[in-house]
Image (cartoon, rainbow, N blue to C red; front, side, top):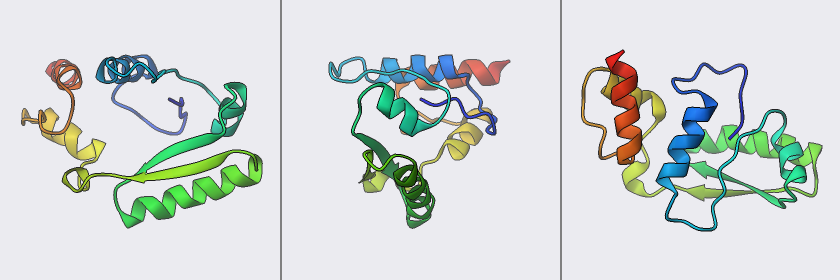
Length: 125
């Protein structure tokens, strides 16, 4: 998980790493870490050969394709692989989930239980 200085996030990098670790704890082949800097530099540091990105809509593809093209120019040996989401998650985005949680709505269909708990804690403050 990258620290992105130009983005304002609801949760800190540490909190997001913690939530992802909890959501993937049953998967033995997943390692969750954070880093600062360029993703291609991080990929080289961990000896990765590919970056996996998720797509929901065509608008995601346009943005992600631009990133992948730039990353390819920076590090031609690193591939970008795109996965599309299941139809039931097509419309889900973090802004919508945060708005639902902020006003006390039920987000359990969209996030794992631990993330739901953390959202409730965050908006109780």
